[in-house]
Length: 164
Image 1 (cartoon, rainbow, N blue to C red):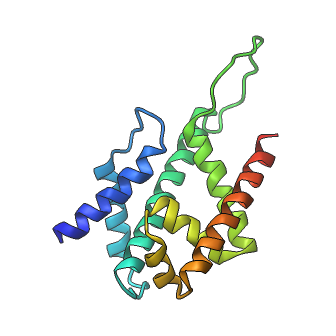
Image 2 (image 1 turned 180 degrees about the vertical axis):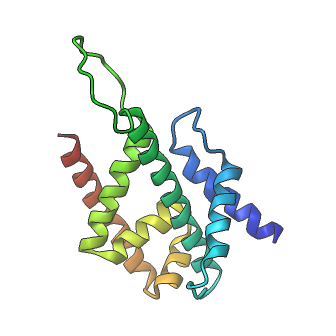
């Protein structure tokens, strides 16, 4: 169990590294929330270690995206009537908003090519190796590398479209 916990914390730290400073979720809270969701799910049939960590990483990403959406909703008044400002304020985009845009782009990729989307989740968010991803998806390592390259290009193009 300590080895599993250590690996979950490593995955959580990787997820949290992309978040804004002062994030209200801490690494331990992210691990705990993912663990609670994992324990509560009786429907998953674990194939092996890599599959477990891939699902764990996916859950952590979901938790962070949900948190970012909630934060953005509250930041925009949580349903209150909008007020227009006379002055134009320059504000840097929030990393939470970036997480939402990335999630939406990943969802769009999943609609087009689910395997490429899974490769991105496992490699980028989960930190799984090419070998582990190939094992989970039951494809060759070359296929994983090819999917990774194509998915990166696709996501960059999709994110550029969203900024315009």
